Length: 140
Image (cartoon, rainbow, N blue to C red):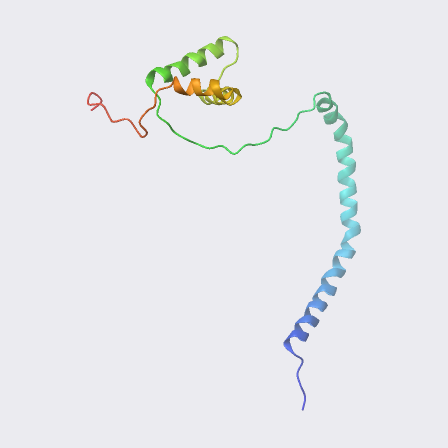
C-alpha cells in the first residue's frame, strides 16, 4: 500500500523550494543595485554641500501637529464685536490675528489664573441658553 505524502509535508516542501528559488535571483542582482545606490550617493554628495550650507545657519525646529476640533457656540453680539475690536488692536500692534487665536489666547489666560480670579471672571459673564437663537421676524 503506497501512501501519498500528507498535505502539510507537501506544502512545506513547496514553500522550501519557492524560497530557495526566489532567494537566489536577488543575490545576482544585488551588485547591480549596489552600483546604482553608490551612483546616487555620489550624485547626492555633489548636490548636498550647496543645500546644506544655507539651512545649517538657521536650524528649524519642527512644530508638533495638534489634532484640531471644530465647535460652534452662541455668543452675545456685544462680545462678538469685542472679538473684532481685539483683532483690530492686534493688527495695530503689527500682529494680525484670527478670531480663533484670540479665543485660544483667552483660554490660555484663564488657565493661567488662580482659582479665585477664574471664579471672578466666570461670575462676570452671564449664562446663556444653549442652542441656536430663534430667527427674528424682521429677517423673514
